[in-house]
Image (cartoon, rainbow, N blue to C red; front, side, top):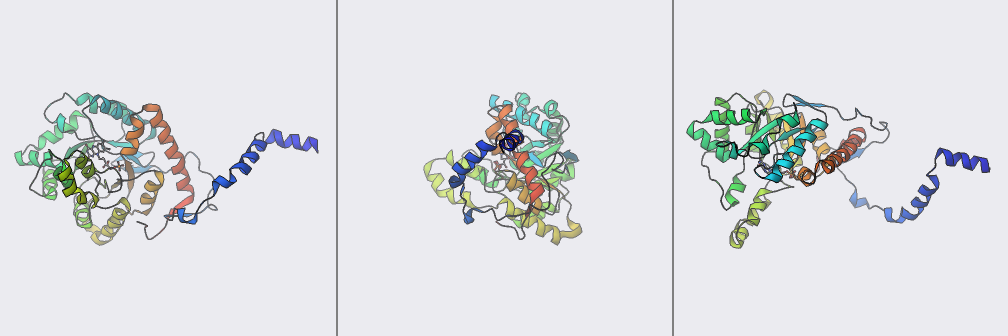
Length: 350
Ligand SMILES: Cc1cc2nc3c(=O)[nH]c(=O)nc-3n(C[C@H](O)[C@H](O)[C@H](O)COP(=O)(O)O)c2cc1C
C-alpha cells in the first residue's frame, strides 16, 4: 500500500497540494446562473484541446492574418505615441495581425511627425493603413488635391487609407471641424479619383443600417465598425468641454450601435443586396473587450472579418513590449479555446 502511494506521488507530484487547494477554494468558487454567458453554446464533447493550428488564418485586405485581430487606429504626434505605435507594429509582425494608424493629418503638409507613424520596417509585410478624418478628406476633395492622399499613403509605405467618419465627435469637440457635403458623396469622389484600398470607419459610435448598406454598395476594401460600447470620442470631447455645453450635448453620447447589432445589420444587408454588394470585408470593432466578444461577432457574421481593439491594446502597449506580448498571448490562449469549444447562438444576443 505504501509503495502504491509513493508511485502515485511520483506520477502526480502536486496532487496533495492541489487536493488541499480544492477543498479550501470550493466555497469561493460558487457561480450564479444569471452570470452565464448566453451568447454561446459550449460543446465539450466535440473537440480535443486546441493545438498550435487551432486558430484558422484569415485572408483579409489581401493579406494573411495568423490571428483574426486588428489594432484599431490610435494616435500619433507625441513621443509616447511613437513608442506605442512601435510596440503595436512589432506585435502585429510577431502575431500576424494588421494595424490602422491614428489620424495622419499632420503628415499631409509636413514630415515632422513622420517618425511617430513610420512603422513599416517593424510591421514587415502585415497590413498597415494610413488614416484621415472625413473633414480633411472633404477639404482635399474640394481642392481637387486627391494626390495628397496617395502621397500620404506612399510616404508611410501603407497598403491603403482609412477614412474615419465622425460627425458627432467633430460637433462635440470644442475646436471641431465642420463639413457640409455628405461623407458618402465625398467617399464616392475619392473612389472615382484614387485607385487604392479604402477602409471606412466611425470612431466609437457605430453606424445604422442605411449607412451600412450604402457602404456595402461601394467598391471599398472594408468597413470597420468602430461601434458603440467601448471608447467613445463624443464622450471624450465633452469631457474637454465646458459644463453647459457638456450638459446640453450629453444625450448625444448615448446614441449609436453596438458591434453585435452591426453584425446583424451586415448579415441582413448581405441578403438584401445580393450582387449589388461590392464591399466584401469587415473589421468588427468598438467595445470589443476581449477575445470572446471578438469571436462571438466573427462566428455570427456572414462576411470574412477580423476583430479590432483600440483601448485594450493601448493599455498594454504604453506599458512596454513585454506587457503587450503577454496580453496578446493570453488572448490567443482564450481564442483557441473559443474556436475549439464555442459556437455563437442564433439569433444574436445584443
Ligand atoms: C487614444 C485613441 C486615439 C484614437 N485616435 C483615432 C484616430 O486618430 N483615428 C480614428 O479613426 N480612430 C481613432 N480612435 C478610435 C479607435 O480607432 C476605435 O474606433 C475606438 O477607440 C473604439 O474601439 P475600442 O472600444 O476598442 O477602444 C482612437 C482611439 C483611442 C483610444
